[in-house]
Image (cartoon, rainbow, N blue to C red; front, top):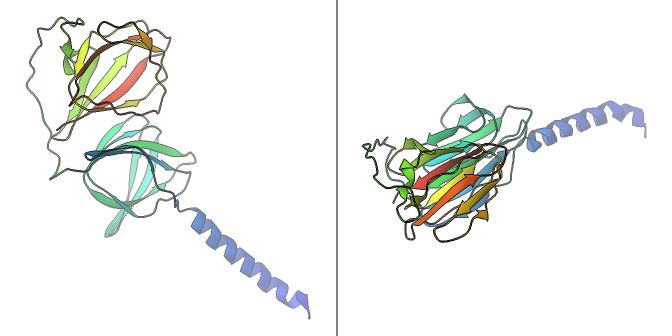
Length: 242
């Protein structure tokens, strides 16, 4: 058998197989990591590698926070693709969607997305009237969290209220009351302490990119936070409206 005759064909076959393998590798088959889930919400950590695509998938209404820069091409089942670019630590709201996402960057991307399972109808922006609290911000007379000076409402609809919280080194919040379930999305590393009424201060370090869930609707809680480190503490606190 003359192997030289088949060498060109073998090279073409291997090249074609390599192209197919590369195309397959560009699709991410893994599902997003579920950070928390209950009857009302699902919190996911969505990650896409450099120049990779997700499978086509669907979301209900959701609120998202970019942990890294997003440089995306987005495909939908029945329309042309679109480019979407966001910086790190931006927030966004999305109505229900079915799409495929391609990461156009040389770096991996990661987002935190809070899906609202019970959403009904399109989002409507809500602007609550400004009512100043007369509370003193003490352990026995805490202010509502929305009116604590380091907490600022930056987005609200009928599903979520989002507080932008910035605490510089050496600063301490007033005692404030959380009366809603909330999902804190931590944006910076910081050395914090936290104190509940009638309790001692306790370490409460912050890790950039971490996310949690705290019950507040059934069991409201009061605390204050102090930044005892050298870096700014920055968190987006996403309140889940009943």
